[in-house]
Length: 426
Ligand SMILES: C[S@@+](CC[C@H](N)C(=O)[O-])C[C@H]1O[C@@H](n2cnc3c(N)ncnc32)[C@H](O)[C@@H]1O
Image (tube, rainbow, N blue to C red; front, top):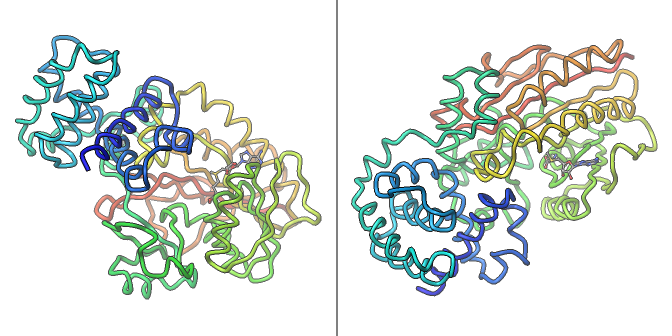
């Protein structure tokens, strides 16, 4: 048990090193060749949870540690200190075991062994921090490159709400295959959301939930489920799902009875779509291709384009993202998104509809893309989103939806998304 815990903590430190020192995402580091490769499934889950929680609360951990340090420690020592601080104060782990583990981890590496005494002394003081004092700390701030942009786009109060939502993390949302959220919610003791998703606040192991094996539902954030609902495919319609993997939206479109062709450039990610279709007993044609080069055999009645983006709407699930990315790494996506909209419109039949969406909080990847597309394409028009569950604060220009993590604050929030529906002239 002790060894397993130490291995999980060591792996968590390696994940932190990858994110904080090498600008890599946890998703890139989580493969079999990475730090988690040698662990059993429980150890992998624990290491990942520790790293994610530490990244989510790094700002608070630094704040608690600061008065006990004369100068900022080297990065590997900071990681050990922050991991242990979060484990004690956020996760509620017993101080004795956490401090001993941190000291032995510090001793075990050449880069940190000389500071094992400091790790011990500092963490003993941190362990005395009252839980209430920890909980009263303000949520971690977004890094400057993103905070400034969100401040300009949505204002300071929204940014504060977004940061609070990031600190709270995300509940587990499910999309029922048969669309009956009330029945699934009753079965799982969960909440049926007004938008048709089912929300579990403390889910435990996903594959142990009733209905997983027979594919009665799939995991999908409530906001991420809305683009396919707004496309509202009719049975038998020829629908293209562009940038489809891992396939949450493909499943929705197929469940609605559409003839779906799902396109994605990544064979590895497309394998996930295939697994998801097999588990849920739904069907779609799968095409591994670059949509900038691929042409459908016939124009589509409707298209869903979930373009690659900064994913800044998903930080509450992926707190590694703001550390691993920066403005320069995101900028090339803006031009690609515009090209993808043009490409999608070329694949669409006259009179057809296109839903464009991104899980981004940046207007450059949402509002600005649609405004520019409407200016570029003569006759293209916006179809205002209509559904009884749309809240007035979600509406933005061109009848599109702007969703943010600070919405539904008493319900567990939602991912950030931009969703617009466009009509090609007939
Ligand atoms: C936001 S994710 C899609 C999520 C997916 N729609 C879902 O609901 O599960 C973006 C996807 O775009 C794919 N992609 C990126 N560039 C592409 C291209 N040029 N052609 C096709 N797919 C591409 C990526 O492989 C990635 O799977």
